[in-house]
Amino acid sequence: MNHEADFSRQSFLGAESDQELGATRVAIVGLGGGGSHIAQQLAHLGVGEFRLIDPDVIEASNLNRLVGGTQADVDQQVPKVDILKRTVLGIRPWARVEVVKALWQEADALLRDAHVIFGCVDGYLQRSYLEGAARRFGIPYIDIGMDVTELQSGGFAIAGQVIVSRPGCPCMRCIGFLTSARLAQEENDYGDAGVNPQVIWTNGTLASLAVGEFVKLRTPWCPMHTDYIWLELDGNTQTVTNSLQPRYARIPERCPHYGGGDGLGDPFFKLCHMS
Amino acid sequence: MKLVWRSTGRFVADVRKDLSRRHAFAHERVGFVGVRAASAHDDGIVLIADQYFPVADSDYVQDNRVGARISQEAIRKALEVALLNKVGVFHVHMHLLPSKRLWFSDVDLQDHDNLIPDFFKVRPEMPHGALVLSPTSIAGRGWIGASNPQPIGEFNTVGSTIQIIRASTVGDTPYNA
Image (cartoon, rainbow over all chains, first blue to last red):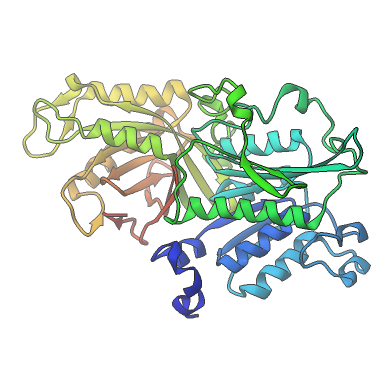
């Protein structure tokens, strides 16, 4: 494979960016509308190692947004992870793709040595659990999510967010995204426009923003100068802004929610348990 | 068994800053890093830096044959870290003389072979080892038992970017990473 020719259009990302991206292990949890876009874009970018985790098979209602999914996949009830494995390998046959059709909690060994975790899950609790796992293993976590709310004045408001949470920096609780009230809600009922409403263009916008933040983490193109990223998408006006909500949160100097002591690593780790 | 080292950029910067301080007579400084661990995919172990423990100024011994010699008291304190904190302990020092590759000196390797196995007497269930830093890079060896150390294959430092340093099969890394 000729890397220079292959990635010449993105060479501005850095002289060694193709090797760096090729050596990066990403875990994507949730391969619906957001996760499928992310997997596809990362394959185009040249990411070399994928861990794809999702417990579900594709359904007819997923075809409005699941990138790579086909009617034939629906007919054959193909697992979402297999659809995205096919998509990734179709773009980059040399990529290493591990898939697990299960809840991420049953496949967390695949997360532990990942370099970045993308969380494309429904609900605040799942986000909280996944960020907790990322913090435990010292991994940056990039969260995306969208929400459709019925307005009293009529119509619907589409909104979404991309959050980058890094070890040693404020977490999603510190910045005020995860609150006690939100965590108390059931994970799938925080939208008003039917069951967990999702649309492809908003998923795609959020996925693109998340991949942009990933590229900042992995290449010298445009390093982050803030301790966290919280981008808000107004899906109706199609505008993206830095969230103002952290201004109203008292962000602690040191994250009190994760890390230190038994909050790092596997508290039950024992060498004798290794094969 | 593949060993992956992981720490935040701030953690490594703080360690470098401490190890760069001048000492009254020692030519270099030494510290210890407490690590947590987790098993990972493909029989790997992720080592996650938790806390840094600098060696006190008074715990160095004058020895002009080496860059730094630490006392039995310093070693006792490091063993106590492993005993009381349920962590693996990694000896750490810094090489400031630029070279193409970053790796331990023969004296370092010999000292570590004598020192590190003792940590298994107080904390046998955790990996222990040694690290060497340059101003921009890191290399190291991990013990997953009292004998047979192996190179740490990869170092992840998470700051404003994620630095991933891969070691050669013998463990050395680029001095300028």
